[in-house]
Length: 369
Image (cartoon, rainbow, N blue to C red):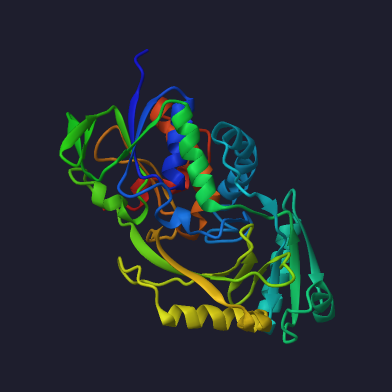
């Protein structure tokens, strides 16, 4: 059979995962990226892999989250060996801190659900136990749930490793900007990149919030909007934090030694300006959880745009406007977790027209207008 020519738009985690699986399946893959690998949200994310929390969990996203969590673990040794990139993976237990009665009630409900999930364990901690776990946690805490077997990694390194692993299989990265898809008789024939057209049999659109801009000539359009997120990085404390702490905000110490304070959710259009308001908000949330964080120096502040859909769930599947056009975007704050399964699913669809993965609720047709 003739080798399938596929163009992947976007070198974020979803695009690079799709490129890797497509190349592994024998496609001739060209990746188009306007800036650099992981230059969007994939390069700035905290990298926490928690399949038990998030939009649509519990709910329609739960089966996908559980499956992609296992896919991550199977994928890591493959791409670390192929690329030589250390993903900095490690287990980091999740500590859900509660300060109000409502939070306490919800945490007990969550704990029961978490304990019913295969491969995880959760336990209730009263305020005294929380203090023993880490005396730096606020004495105003009313209780907490400790969830074990959660993992964290470096999101940029994951994206880079996927790209380089795809390249070892023959994929090619081109710096450029896609400005339209060409078709003939309802079938994709090429992608316009800068001043040229790249001929292809299929195109995977994985441009995050910019995905809609690549759909020129493909109707109907799909609503994918940017959701701004800012994160603070603080200097390393004398004693490392050994848990991912969540409550009013998120606090986690990464392999780089820095303490990451995450994250805002701002409807700010395409603006990625770093703001004092975000810095103040993030620090206030973090200090409520761990007062001593106020003593640590802020060494970096970042901002990125995450793709969000109308129902806040990803879009994965073929577009109805033209055969050979596929969309994979919209994972919002869970892009790192869902990256492998979105990439695998869209690669299946490109290569065989079907996938066994549970992506039916993510069909683009649910949002097309």
